[in-house]
Length: 368
Image 1: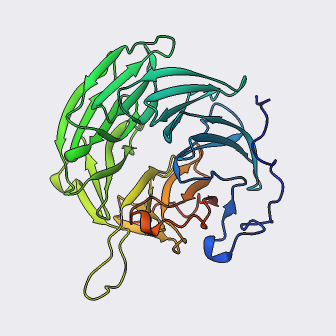
Image 2: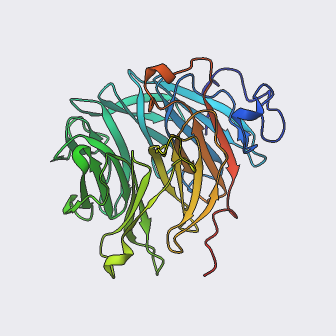
């Protein structure tokens, strides 16, 4: 499937289980597998390849303007396969459902499609401001990409045409979005939340008053437990160390709730340190979820039992984003500075890491 040149050196120099040869123990407190040749600047987004291809590939977009692709082997080793460069920091990545292409959204106001077989890229979308989100939509009657931008629009593109099929105006800049056909949810500046239905033609389904009092940072759709597993609601994370679980149609009002996370245990001088929730992902098999934060920790949760399943040790830097592979065996998380404490806390000596963790059993729901 791949014939492009590898980036950096090839996937040698892996120091056995967990740690790379030169990585200090403090940088990898969970002793997880380290991805070779990580990005040179903060990691903004990651996505694993879809179930349509047999191997696991991981792509990551970074503030160094590059998207890198690795093959993840069963023994946890990674091999750098290829990379592409955008004209600005890479804000989001999404796979085509057949695993042959990756869509890359950038602060350069474009989205490009990277054909992995030929290692060529071409522009497939354009906005008037940085593009914050990109998602591939595979519907029974159409396929397209959905792009959300700081230009306050949501656009839908047939990748063969230079103009969008549909443009929807947003109340504010797009900060986060997720798609699980036939539903999309978008969170914007000023705490707006809009749910869209994607059947036939995408259209607004309803606006929801935000359950959170602070800026929206990340959102992830969850499926219901019954039957076909249709999308039932979403988890929304804010900069104030809090996640909201929100059903589209709640059986009872108490089904919707919020919980605190990514906060310091103790208090210093009577104050508690509160950190941003940088990313939320649901486990594809168990329906449990992972959150990662500016406190440099990841946590696993069971939203139905309303319990925390696991809390990691603290990394040396924030965890900026995370991803599960398609069968839920691998949890990937990126350790890199998110500028949450301003430029004075940026340390160019600290390198960026992507770690891989065998996670299937840790995310099994609690027996109630």
